[in-house]
Image (tube, rainbow, N blue to C red):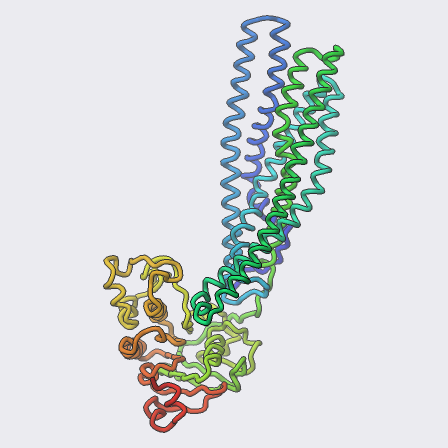
Amino acid sequence: MTTPDTLRPRPASDILRTALRRNRGAMIWGTVLMGLYQAGETAFPIALGLIVEHTMRDRNLGSLGLSIAALAVIITTVSLSWRFGMRILQKANTTEAHRWRVKVAACGLQPVARDVDLKSGEILTIATEDADQTADIIEVVPLLISSLVAVVVAAVALGLADIRLGLLVIVGTAAIMSVLSVLSRRIGSSTQEQQARVARAGAKVADLITGLRPLHGFGGNHAAFRSYRKVSTEAKLQAVTVAKVNGAYAGTALALNAVLAGAVTLTAGWLAFDGQINIGELVMAVGLAQFIMEPLRLFSEMPKYVMIARASAERMALVLTAPPVTTPGSEHPAAGGNLEIDCVRYGTLRDLKFTVAAGEFVAIAAYQPRAAADLAAVLAANVPPDAYEGAVRVAGQELGELSVEAVRAHMLVNPYDGEIFAGTLRTNIDPSGTSRTVPEAVEASMLTDVVALHRDGLDYGVRDRGANLSGGQRQRLSLARALAADSEVLVLHDPTTAVDAVTEQLIARNVAKLRRGRTTVVITSSPALLDVADRVLVLDEGVVTAEDTHRNLLAGDADYCLAVAR
């Protein structure tokens, strides 16, 4: 079910090391090219100083032309090395972010949920923003090294002019990094808290969107909006805190860099005035004092991005290192469609026991909706086998012994609120593009009128969550998808609650016809579906209290008649 790579612990440091190791080729080339860029930037004022000194001494036009050619080479090197260096690094950055997005998403989409206290909206934030910020380490390290190259070149050049200038650059850079390292740690912790609060706000939005219609129904939307406003305000305040820390960091870095540049300029001017360096060296020192501010800025900002990348990696580790809720088996179901529920106790289910033979169409009339939901959850393998008592057997094998993928390939449980995805009718019915029964599924679910209504037919565009479809159309689309899967065992949970009575009658007959010879269980209170079933099981207070055909139950069971008659 899961690969060893996904099961291996991934603390934040391991995630960052993995990202660096996977992209070492791109990072080497990027570092070389960005080092050339920074060296060229730093060489420009050095060359100007040499040109001034050489021209003033020799006053030779040939030497001047040669110097101009040298400047052209430096400028060309700076331009090309920056362009291709950043192209390599940004491509590697984008690719690495994609890899982590896919890995985090895969953890969230695994058949067995992970034991992590995060909602889907929070995992979405981790898979997007945190993955992007973690991958930034691919650019940070080369830029850090190349900036260091520029500082070293400047220090060496100034040291050759006068050792005091070189030492001033080295000592000043060390002092700046010491001060900024303290602020960078504050940025890392603040950013991690901000990402957590943004993720909680995103999860709250996802919950609101999913339950907006029911909230409006019982007037709870205002309370829900107030709840969202609270978490959103917390995220906003934390974002302001992070912005303040970032502003303080940037302001401090800029001020310290300016102080260092000013100190180099004033020191060089004093040395030139005292006759200890010549005019060319003064020009070089003043030029380097200006040019060195850019690599110093980059060099001083890199620790901040390292801490942000580490904070995001720690959030990704929450998902990637979380163990699965349960360890699934590895067996595959044997051929056959029989289903057995043996004394299952879970939620509202109390020693529930029944058997569905292969090829049988059984309807379950659950008097309590909670019991129907609990039964559907157990059959869908959404509940770990060790979380309930008793056993569920598919084709004679216990659910806990089977891999979740194998169970879901053999037995499909279609929920009453099946998700509709952005795409087309066709891609929603047959996401993998491999079903051979799409036309039959469309006809059986009575989705034909929706297909005929639009010029594009099955290629008609569907918005996210089926926003451009009615409730009944969404339900029939979900039913068509379940039927098109053509699984050995199909469990449907309230598949026709949003359609009219006439359409419901047609759907019931069509489903019974299409699924003839295949095991089908329908959890429903629909008289139409109950009537076409081979037999009906009455589920009351968590146990099966009656079993017969729909019409016999109507004739002899007053409670049943009251529960299902419309």
